[in-house]
Image 1 (tube, rainbow, N blue to C red):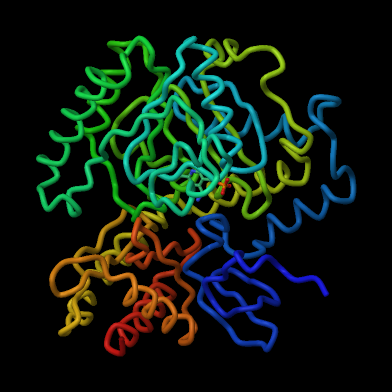
Image 2: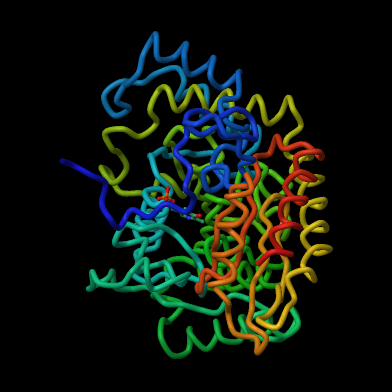
Length: 419
Ligand code: PMP
């Protein structure tokens, strides 16, 4: 008898029958409020009618039109439509399937365009699970342990994670930029550094937003040394943070962004966007793939962008995010007992995390897991994150209503009182 790998862990006990909007329904008909959104993927909710209709129509006319063999309409339409929302100047697109592939494409482009070998990533970042992207991932050793040698040429600088250091954001930012300069002086000369690869908000690393001064510091150094600033918008893109892209909060100009997740409402589709002049520096043959830019995924992405615009989902993410963050902050004191407390509640838009710590301030992954499990039993699906998995994160779909946020917070209130 065959079975799934025992290492394929499942965060909730749910076997899904179907999804609709902000809810999932299990095979026994039980309803769950889904504040996981497939790890930030189903931003238009489960099976949004407009997305379903677009995908259905596309399945009936063309499923796979391999894009280095033939061109197809949904890919051209998506490319054009993305121009309405992409950051100014990022007018050239390459499409792949997964986030990891997009990050690898950005890495290849950065190395080929600059002729330099090294990249600098930021501590706590997550960029994927392939060998190259696992080498760039520092949000937990579980993603890179046991299959060394990893890819060479990756250096790690601090991210301004103020809460972890126990500093103000100002102090953490000063430290991060100072250490970055120290890295240049000691480990990777600027002339050998191709790119910074950075998330606007550390995602898997614990939902920790960057800040304007930090990103200004990166931009300044990038400009000074001819280093490319690659912003990984895979989890933060397409309205998730209350702006179209997370970096817009920090007033910074990226050279390349990576996109995936919220782009296609659940169909596997990813990509990179860069100025045409830069994209042209990718070497011949370095961009391709059997499934990239799949026709059904592209049709779903076009419909997704229409839904985001027509339903005002970016503004909704900002408003509901403010509601969710405030609600989680109000409820956090309920978690305080002899064992510990919620030490920090943070986020941006509809990315909100509550970090559990013991009474002496150490990460409390056991209590975070207990809270996440208790929430699932009570009909609210959540995930954990952070290096120690001691943060419980909420990532509702962008269509979430004020009433559904209240519904989730009511369950969260009971969970915190019970664990
Ligand atoms: N970058 C970021 C910021 C992500 O959040 C993720 C996925 N969590 C990835 C890259 C990798 O994406 P995928 O799992 O589709 O390869």
